[in-house]
Amino acid sequence: MADTLLQPLSGSAPVRRTMERGTFFIQTWGCQMNEEDSEQMGLYLRDLGFRPAESPHQAQLILLNTCSVRRKPEDKAFSFLGELRLLKQARPDMIIGVAGCMAQVRADEIRQRNPHVDFILGTAQVSRLPAVVEEILQTRRFEKRLELPERKGAVVTDIPQRNLERRGKLKAFVPIQYGCDKFCTFCIVPQTRGRERSRPTEHIVQEVRRLVELGTKEVTLLGQTVNSYGKNLAEGRVPFSRLLQILAGIPGLERIRYTSPYPRDFRTDLIETIRDTPQVMEHCHMPLQAGHNDLLKRMRRLYTVESYAAIVDEMRALMPEIGLTTDIIVGFPGETEEEFEGTMEAMRRFRFDGAYMFRYSPRPDTPAADMEQVPPALAAERLNRLIAQQNAISLEKNQACEGREFEVLVEGRSPKNPGMLQGYTRCFRMVHFAGGPELVGQTVAIRAERGRQWGLEGVRA
Ligand code: SF4
Image 1 (spheres, rainbow, N blue to C red):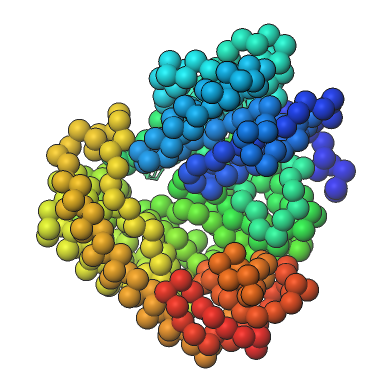
Image 2 (tube, rainbow, N blue to C red; image 1 turned 90 degrees about the vertical axis):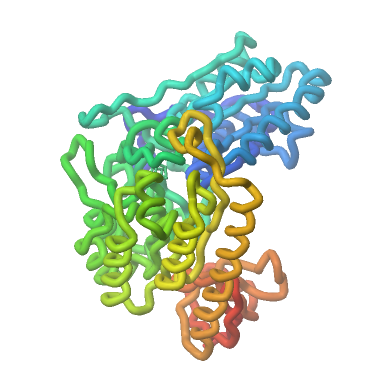
């Protein structure tokens, strides 16, 4: 089986080992999908003969993998590109590339403001990186590849295979679906990543098998609406719950996570599969975004607070230990005090274990950017109120865990507290505890002694 896994599938970038090409540095902003794309691009560059550099100042090739979901990472990317102008003047042979969501939707502006950029690569063009770099090395001409796969209800067959020779690591992200069909009014992703496309099940199985061979024990399946996986496949429809069952059959794979599911597509068959499949962790990060139906309607989220509550109730009835986390946007256009209070109320009702809470950031060319905006100071004040409320709930929920035992996959030393080891429970609580390096990579039983807002402090049980 290992040999067949090493065969490149159609559409894959050829694996080459060539001459030394110098060093590369990739700067990544944004989500796990971007982190994953950066890892893939790093593998392609290694195959071309580049080695990783510690900092951009030493690198012959610098790649910015950008994010457009909020304004701040876009500003950071432009600022970084400005700094690179001087570097390029000093070393004209160096190569500068821009990839990711901002490259997809603002390519012309990037090039206009930064003529020192050598190439721009769209979100669906990651596997073309080797060809683009080779072309630039030979011709020194600017390259731009922005094509997004077409999909108008038809089967998608042009999903490239990924580089499976990844670094061995305990936990790994595995994209299973690209793009999005939902078109929420605040979101730029359908424009930056295109329409929803699922990876063939066999590609995913091959990748996960290979990861397990390389030492991975936990995979996180990635997709913008991960639980709508499986439409438009040449092999026929494969529901997300079926994919989880297939992956759970891979020997050596201990834990499966997934992010982020879309509430409307979260059905009973999936909840039952999570309950009945030991490898699937009892954690669900399901973005609520707002807790008032008028807000949800303006956001074009295709569910109500009540239908969301029905899913939460069903999950907690079948899996009382499940950890639930969410995303919330505060200060969405037109948000009234009453609507915001609805979000506060929903957060008290759902009592999430944790939440990512953001102030709305207008994205050009999205419907919400043209709606009546909430004054920034008011949005900031509301966000602070929401965060304070949620922090108190998270602390209470973690304190309620004191005295209980948890299964923890040990990841290594805590970066914030190097005297302690760090890992996560099955319900996705971070745990710190004392222990030796021999425990890293092991699954151990930990008794929680103290609940903190960020997680648990514990001891070996
Ligand atoms: S579901 Fe909405 S928020 Fe999520 S990626 Fe799609 S359009 Fe964006």
